[in-house]
Image (cartoon, rainbow, N blue to C red; front, side, top):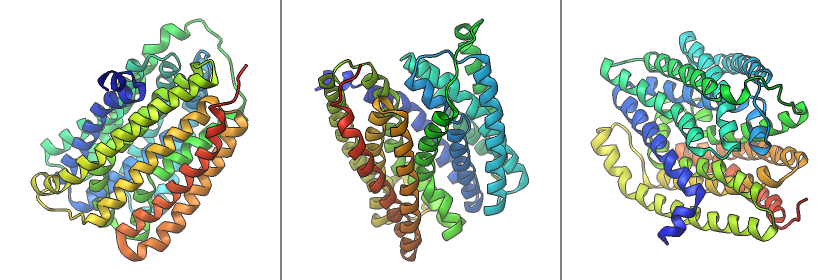
Length: 399
């Protein structure tokens, strides 16, 4: 059993990402303890907008790099920089119109998106080369930047989201510069290759739909409820959602190249079955642990400032499990599917967002618990629909 666990590349990646997850959780809990409720909610909203913006910023370049072997040349970096600036501008404009965020915090969001967008290129390049240690180090730098920001805010006794936000933006800019420097030997003197913009838009549509759905509770709570409920959900997501998020990322990190490198249908099915069993067992264990420790964390770390009833905790755990299994199916399509398949599952992602929005709008009658279950309806639809497309891909013959 121990050998089986160690052979699971997804679980090893999840373990590596677990350190980043702990940093993210610790950072959020520190900020939840030191910041006033509304300011913690604004920081959580800022972080969600940044994650969505970063997923869109490369316009599919990061997804395509994982699917193919080609050099991330200077032209690609310039392209990603320009698209990141455009996406950052658009996200800031939308946030300005929808949410009660000060101008300075909006500027921080823009800087974070540009830095995070640029960082996705070296991360994707290292993943495509199966150099997972380097890719993981750059990936968890985002969570490390949040932890650094929270420590600075805690030590300074911050009463506003702005100070930790500025610290986080500077850290992300530094990580982007280091990532660029790390792959310079690989791109020196190379002209590289390009890809069709239509494929890039399909890829970014798929990735951004999943990221938006993943942040949907935080994006909807201040509109359908209030900032206090957003803060409560952010605390809940930190405790109950972090293990599932790390496992979800771990699956995507390694299952895609693992399936792509398998030469026969039997090998692909074996790779997927092995990873699926291990991931299911780990998700179940994580759910039990979260159920046990959540009351203690709320009492001892947050001094009972936030209250989470068992129906709300149940909703978070169910949604977390659906995210993990949806990621399994999406990884199969990402590794083995065609451009048309990516376009199809991107459409599924946007339909899932519609399901989630309708579910949240109806469920909000029962407060935050109803909103979370409503968004979970979108994840349920996404998981079933993508599995329907993914299953045949494991058995198709490839040239």
